[in-house]
View (cartoon, rainbow, N blue to C red):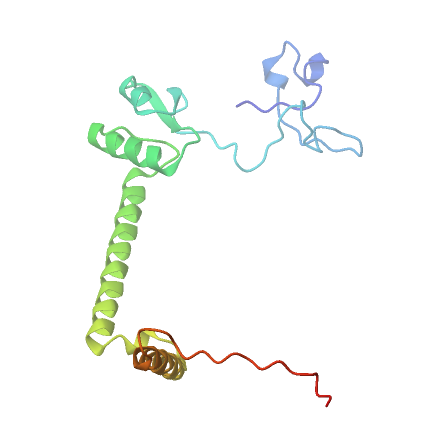
Length: 193
């Protein structure tokens, strides 16, 4: 990218039709739009405009694996916006074909993925070993404190209910199968005599 001073194209003394006079001067001035780096005005020299090594080569943006197959030797590859899954697939294919991607360090990217996968496997193994240890102990460690007391109270209540049910069943069995002794309630005068 070539940087030229503001209004270079208006005056011959600043570079209009005179390449020798086309130079860069930093824009100054209170109301200078170029100094404020407004949209629509020429770019100002700043970090990020470094000349690339492969400036003569053609830049190709890639979004899929099919685009990677069309790459030729004199082209530079740049990855577009995409998800992690697609990025992994393209990085692996680029490594196989020995294609260099300018905005992605393929080897470093794939190494980091392998490390993450190994950590995940190790964590799963640790969790499995913890679960097996708990099951060997009898699972008491898995229960929260105080749950044993609640269980005992619950057992007592169920025992009481079952004993009442047994008593009722025994009463029904002891009564004769024919007519049951049913006592009729006596009519009362409401407590007056």
